[in-house]
Image (cartoon, rainbow, N blue to C red):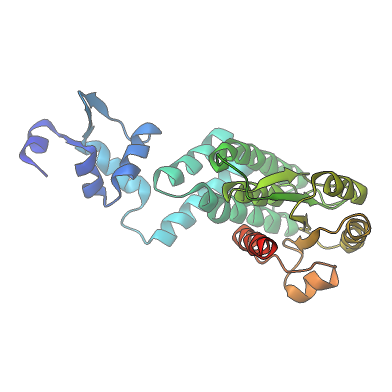
Length: 281
């Protein structure tokens, strides 16, 4: 710490970053999101050294990164079940301020939290109202994160995404849709419980690079195969089936998918990018 810092009890953002062991832009995000108090001193920001100790404890910098993230996910889960959107959003903001990308928030916080909600519901630890409240709160968080995935400029292609008739889990569809938008694709997002003919109508109209059919829970196999058949009858687009109910490539092929979309949204984006590269050859 510099002599000036000792005398005033404050440091600039560069020195604050060094003390916390993070990038300068991370500290700047702390200030911009209100997590770290700072005063504007001419052309620079000054932070009280005492406030840095509070941020250090809150970040869990003395813990392994995985432990801090687990603690954040557990806190997020509590806020989701309570329907506390403001508290849940603070967890998201803290992750973003710590340097996490929006896609990482989807995959390491929101998706695991909702999987745990599902597990607790299946064990009878949560009732339907709890599950619906957590889902509704998560959808609002995803909506608030959505603009961060917008990419200006020419789109790399169109992708149609939706869940089959009877499949009401919209959150996985929304996450995949935003991740594809972040990768530069134009996404037609149909949401959950989409009839087979609606998939086919949209595919005929939009002529997408591919159609992604999401299925999260077992018991929708007939709806999936009906949707795939309808798309094949009316279009020549690539049809992909994926989601938590499709565990591997064999299961995907049994449902009529041309490829397995993988285990999470990152795998989906990677597959769509490969298909685009093949299409352009």
